[in-house]
Length: 98
Image 1 (cartoon, helix red, strand yellow):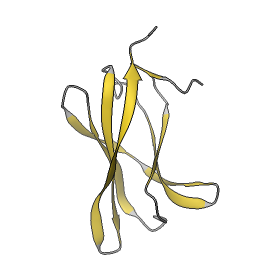
Image 2 (cartoon, rainbow, N blue to C red; image 1 turned 120 degrees about the horizontal axis):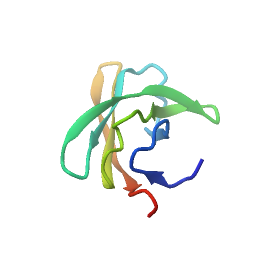
Image 3 (tube, one colour; image 1 turned 180 degrees about the vertical axis):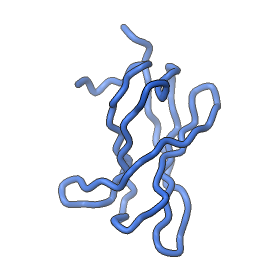
């Protein structure tokens, strides 16, 4: 698999680092703003990488990567009494054959 993400890719793994242990998190998803400005939520689960349960994991589905450009991505979750979003990450999606 390439480290470059293209329009139409399906099954691309997105790992968003939340910067702290989120092993007890619930209501986990990614809020995504498309290059066009549309905002959607993608399902995500807590993932452990190298022994650290501080990541949200999402696999892209058909239609998720429908536009070329920069997608803005935020982790959203509930942890104990806190609910909210993480820092904004940028996912660059290229046109096919670019």
